[in-house]
Length: 102
Image (cartoon, rainbow, N blue to C red):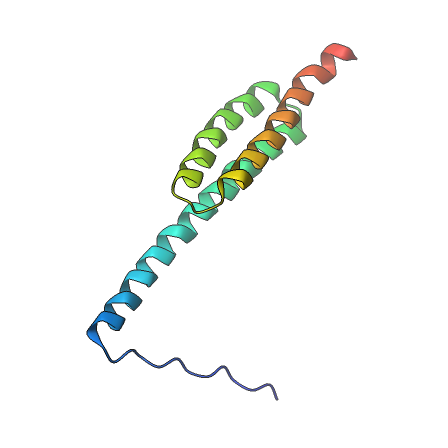
């Protein structure tokens, strides 16, 4: 069958062991923040899909805050954050203008 992954060796030096501990802690924090980011974006997209202007606007305001915090911490690149905010803003704006034009 498929070969198993080679087992990672534990670092021998104390500084290496400490670095592993720090990396695990940082990885867990970053994973949590990335999840929060994606959830905020999904909430806006769900509100837009349902056609609820008020809910979409509120969700977008919360998402902007989350996106900016994540970009400041450099979890995602600032340009990715700006791009995502721009796309969400366009969706919310289109939702607000659609019934007025129709």
